[in-house]
Image (cartoon, rainbow, N blue to C red):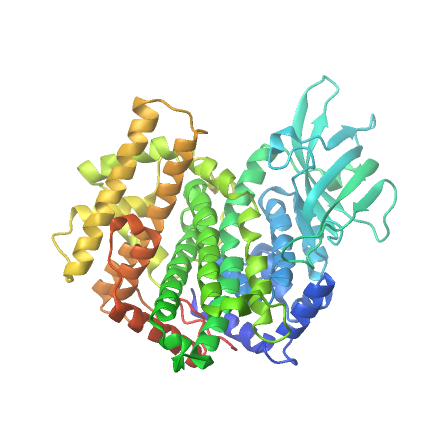
Length: 582
């Protein structure tokens, strides 16, 4: 991340304050009260507006501050470690804005920027009650008036975040043309000051987590609007714009998971250091100590995955069709697993809806589970990845067998993605995004180029682990070849989903190994800011248990000490030096 972005993130942390304190702008007491009351966090969103954070949602060409994807990730993380309900309402506003920044008309972009600067929320309205994620079956209807100037809208959008609170909605609809042809279109609809003229909000839906969130929807009946104001230009298919939007938003969802898991681990570490059982602290009990160390290592691996995927938004936009589902599948699932492990360390206290600090654990653990549902469920993301495995297998096998004439470029790109001190600025134009990577996965290719040229490594334990990782990747590619080229089984089979899952777990393992390699070369290894051998081995052991890497008490003790150092030094659990107010 750029130094400027690190400084801005540090300022946000200090402005928002220690959430354990009642006078902090975003504090745990208010979050718990609002959660119990299922109250929308409007006051907290107003605070973000006063602090200028809505400017981070506006692109630079509109005089906004949306300059670096990793800064948005940091902001999401900082908000989420305090209250996911607030962070998700804010994040949904970005989701509803991305299609407009990618494909909206200049006048739509100006109007939307003005709306956000006034603190108005936005939403992306894709799903319908009868069709769920099957957006190709959209029934929300658009009909043009005979004058060609006005449109009439009828239909319902359901299970929409900010569905009744959003001042605007980016809506996927189906237009019926006079010749009988149907076409999916995108609309930007601005909600009026008072509902009427055929626009009716649906009731808020009660949810297990993020209880205060406005998960609702709206129903339109013969609703009039001006075509020039509402309809997106027909520069590309509406479905393409939606899919490109989700490529970006799925990656940025990582901030929700990372922030919430940071709080879960921080709360549990505090408890484990203070709670006395059987003549020792919980942190001194071997089983609890191991779980805490393993959770810390897994969280740092997720941090690296999020960093690499987020930087890819600007550096490798043509490959997001692969990287986005990997990140969206692997990271939330892994963070949910961390929450379950930490709950075992807390014991009965993880279940209590109390008003003290530990009361936030049960809220965060509940809220965390919704992230894997956003912007395409786990199964949807695995399906997107499965559809590209055949081409990926071909290109990666060629790289492993013959190397690559672009090896130097691939390694340089990998350094930009994985080196903590590096940074990637800018946001892609719609034309740079692709619905298929056409078999390209630059980071995996860089890994294979590195391993082809590696004669040995400094640590025997690391050498054995990397050899096992190589073999795991080769076996995965062989399985893909057998499934798709020999057996010719369909991409929606359960076996294809399993192969996608295997590839999605191998990707962060290979990224971790490359990051370790770069830190070795730079001789800049620390437990806190770099990928040490301890983190490499424990990360691979946690992410890919089939590699057979043995547990090690001494390694766990060093990792646990590194986690405690982060708490003492007021740092987030991250490879980047992100300051923490708590």
